[in-house]
Length: 137
Image 1 (tube, one colour):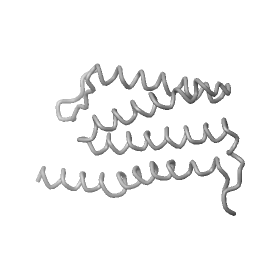
Image 2 (cartoon, one colour):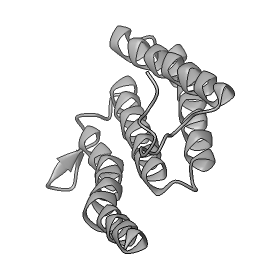
Image 3 (cartoon, helix red, strand yellow):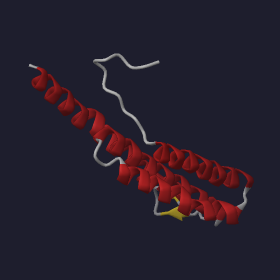
Image 4 (cartoon, one colour):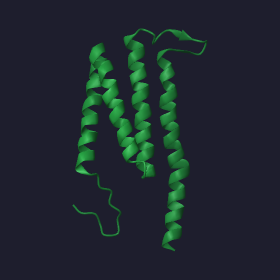
C-alpha cells in the first residue's frame, strides 16, 4: 500500500536490506550458540555480528534517528557478547570490587546504548520537530 502523498517515505536499498537480514542470521547463530554452550561457534559469531552492526550504523549516519538506533544495537551486541564470554570463560560470577561481578559489567555498554537513545528521544528528536515546524511556517 503506497504512503499518502504528504507522508515522508524511508526506503532501504535491497543490498542494505540483505545485509540487515544476514546480520540477524549471524546474531541468532551467536545467541543460539550461547544458549547451547557452543563456545567456539558463539565466539566466532561475535565478529560478523558486531562487524555488520558497525557497517549498518556507518551507512545510516546521515539519518540521526537511524544512527541512534543502530548505535544502540552496536552497544547491545557488545554487551551481549561480553556477557556470553563472561559465562563461557567462567568470570561471570567473579566479584569485581564490592559492587558487582564479571557478568554485570555488561551494564556499561547496555547503558551507553540506552543513553544514546535517551539523548535522541529527549534532545535530538524534539529539535528536529521544532525545526520542521519552523520550516513549514
